[in-house]
Image (cartoon, rainbow, N blue to C red):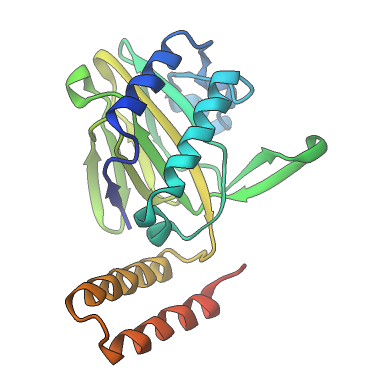
Length: 229
């Protein structure tokens, strides 16, 4: 499932992010890529140890906590700390599939595995600020070309083949991260999401309808069955 979630960050928040990133200590994005991805990757990335990355990453997590749509679609169990990248001057990232497991720094330096069920890109540049830089995603739903307003994000299966096309003018800034979901299977997550959205619509259209209790029970029983929590 590919889903566009608008207005995760406000205009003021986007402006703050861009101000902080303007003076950040960018590094070669290949340093954090796997062997195959490094061959296709040409961008700049903010090291995860950089204080700006940590501060802004925390702000991204706070914003996700205010998004019921993100929670409904992704059912997050663990979110890998958000990272930040920059494309300019023809830089791109050719077709690749994200690593299945990422390792988050835990307490006392322990490496905590995070299964990358869901990939997310949060756009920080307006589409008018740059040419190219589309996120092209190929999956069972076909090929989608994504270029969203600043502050909006897209979620899609971590199993998807995807690329960022060359940025031929301007600068493309984004945050990206992965989520280990409570429900591993993408098809099951989509069914739960559609059921949850139907329950929400029915709550507005027919509050007090006995079917709401039944449907809510079905939702939670399916989540209980499919969750690997």
